[in-house]
Image (cartoon, rainbow, N blue to C red):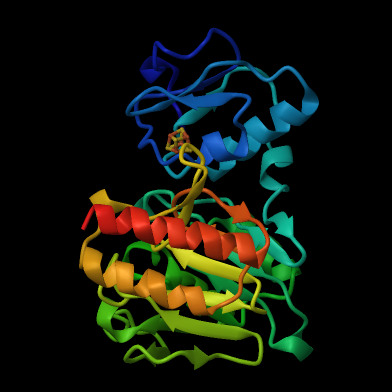
Length: 292
Ligand code: SF4
């Protein structure tokens, strides 16, 4: 719960505010850019919501915030923010909200599919919040849980316990130690079913992997994301924990695949034609090589 005593002075006066516990994860700025902005090491409210839609987005940010750093002084129907998750991104792909502090607010996603098509898939772990678990149950539960890498596993064990889902993760990121049911080895691609392809992408961590769904949606963990400032795809040099040259090789490997959505754990989502995505990926690789 946010504390008015810890309210950051950079917030504009009014109802919504951010307090000093903010870890600058960017979630609120992605959900409600009309309300929140970055001021260095924190997000703050730079403009109070003026419409019902903006209020709803601010409430969604409050719910999604990993550290409970967003407060609201007025009377609100918080269910508006809670019930909005999982929030539709496109087709049958949803953002789960309810991010976890242990994964630094990484975004997790839901692929909603009928049982006849393999059932629902969670990509990385949201916070194990009762309200989210209830909504996932209403949508058919979780059959598979793909963990891109060791940093974004959060409450994976609690989700596995609740839904009896099969977790999938690469051995090199500690999958066995975490008790994961299906451990990926090596760097060969592995199909989980007709629509889901695991692609090993070592670099950010030794056992990082991405998930390609229907040759269209690429769930990229901390490997690849959209940079709104550079307006192209990017990687995170300062948080490369394993090997930058290896991450470059993994990026080059992705040139062989078609996808027109990039859905990262950290960084921004992007949607474009697969041709444009490939062009952006080439730009990203060239940029990475300059920083090798
Ligand atoms: S979602 Fe929360 S922790 Fe993340 S930037 Fe916003 S206020 Fe800070």
